[in-house]
Amino acid sequence: MVPQRQASGEEAYPAFVLKEYAARLAEAGRARALADGDGAAARAWSETDRDLFDLPVPLAADAICRGEDDLVAGLGETYAPVTGGLALANPVRGCLDRLALVDFLRTVREEGRRLVVLSPSALELYLGCPYAWFVQRRLRPSAPDEAFGPLEKGSFVHGVFARFYDRLADEGIVRVVPEQWAHCETVLAEVVDAELGRQRTLEAGEGRLLPLSRAERLEVERLRDQIAESLRRQSRFAPSYAVHGHERPIAVEDAVDYAGVRVNGRVDRIDVDRDAGRFTVVDYKGAVGAPYAAAMDEDAVVPPVPGRVQALVYAQALRPALEGLHCAGALYLGYRARTDKDLVAGAADGAVFEDDPFVKGASLVPMNFEAYLDTVESQIAAALEGLYRGEIAPAPRGAWVCEHCPVPNCERRLS
Image 1 (tube, rainbow, N blue to C red):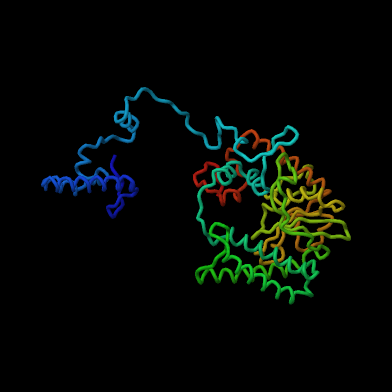
Image 2: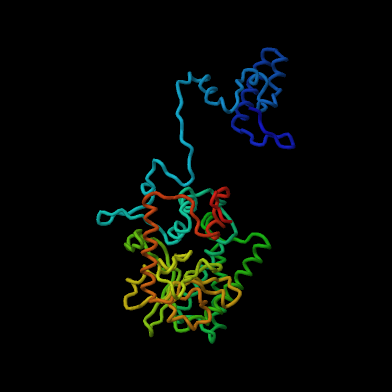
């Protein structure tokens, strides 16, 4: 084996532990040689062999050099005779030969059943691509402790919206309306300032949005403008609905099951039309596009499962808790929307939202909405049976799944 070197002559992949060990041996050998008055030996300990990882010459002289194919034989010669070998099958991506996947997942037992615990986002990712879910949620490749990207900005915006609506609720205001925008804008500015201050109290790794450079501070100001513009649009969206709750937790102990798994998560917002007896679930996103829409044709016998299902899971999960209210929508709100038509996507009751200018046709569901929720859940339940069987082979439903997948060499990658 010969160490690979860069153009500068330095090792491309230096073995720091080996170098430190060799340096200590060279220092001790040189000291002994000088004490014995052996100048030649002392000089030899000061020289290194570039072809043998820069080992001191006396060490390199005794080194056993073998190719990487003879590594096992080399170790065997050093420590003990090689008595045999084990032939291993070539690994197949997305195939677990000997492990029961469920044994490595969080589960709960209920009436003799073993239910996997999943957040709606994890459930959505498994449906999007089982292998992407396995890599991102189970293997969890390392990531920087601190970043200034979409995840941090999203957490910040969630915090701003939550505290903004808390402030309005304290004043008896249940929704933003155009007539009160001047006051709401003042409240929003105070909330954003307070939330920025709170970021400095968070520790590294807690998803804080901490602008350090001038460019990052400009991004925060742009984000401030985007939030304000989003709220202006929200003041005109679904005018008969008011904010009923936000950041509502669904804990494992609440025993909320969906499609054969136990749900664990947090609902961004619940809007209610008391006069009509309806509620909608609102999930905040940076931007919303085609994968978020229901995309159900009027003549469809069975509705397709949308690419994004988080809001649908939450809507179905909340139906028993919001007794007396019928679900009319599971919607995603893009806070970076530049136009009205980009604000909302998802699944909405066509009979309720048909005339709403913010809800596009692709998001309208042309059937009884609660029957739609039930049908989609039954289809998702069939897909999640694969999770219990340990199926994690790559099977992306669209390029949007692959965009953020950390496996660049996947043979099924679509983007």
